Image: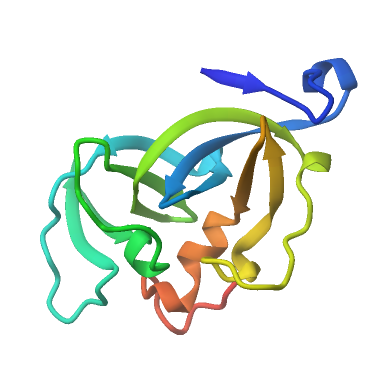
Length: 169
């Protein structure tokens, strides 16, 4: 279900603004939005094959139709909520550059259209995700969404998913 929403309640096509689709997901009590074009698929959680000496947040890898996909639990990485694996726990499979990576989140709630003018700059104070990975904040139907630059986050050196010699974008 795709919702087209604006601050005035009118759709983007009515206002002539450019809208982009975002996938909404939750980590603990917070709701996040990522560019739907980075999403390959959404799957139920399955226990990955663990990798020795990997950071705690890197749960392991899965074989996805012949592609070995690292699985990152964002709840552990950002210390948000509990890392309980329930029937509602999902893995969002992302296409990031030339990489395929999975992120574990509490749930996926919706796909929505947001216009760029709806997204406000993130403040520089405490948040679960470093503000350099946040495109901004958006209020949608009384909910505050944190719009994440998922590509920048996944390709960062702190995620340990790419070679240290690769430059951050």
